[in-house]
Every structure is written in structure tokens, then in C-alpha cells.
Length: 68
Figure 1 (cartoon, one colour):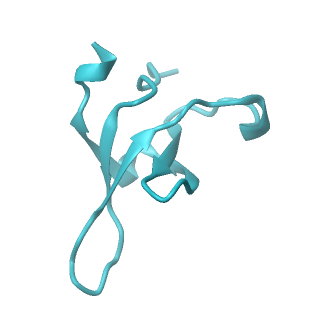
Figure 2: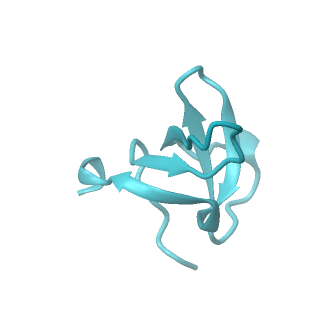
């Protein structure tokens, strides 16, 4: 199993946006409601409060200083 990213790590989420913009988000805490932890998958939280489970191939780390 790969090492999970720390909660609060800022990421850029790749989406198909008509204007070509990518969505910014942060890694959220994996909770019991999220189910069993899966290798390569992370819960991400968007600025509007929405959460999504995304595989690590769907985003890139922008700022992981909080993870240090």
C-alpha cells in the first residue's frame, strides 16, 4: 500500500472544464463513513465544502508543505 497523503495537502484536480480550468482542492480526512481505505484513493474537499473520492492519477500535488 502506498503512503497516503496528509490531510490538508493542496492539490489540483483534473476536470473537463469548458474554459480549460482545473479545480483546486485539499486532501480530506478518511473517515469510517468513507469505508475501508483503498490503495491510491483519497478523499478530496473542494472550496464549497463538497467531497469526492478520487484516485491519485486524477490530481497532482500543488503544495504539500503542510504534510512535512
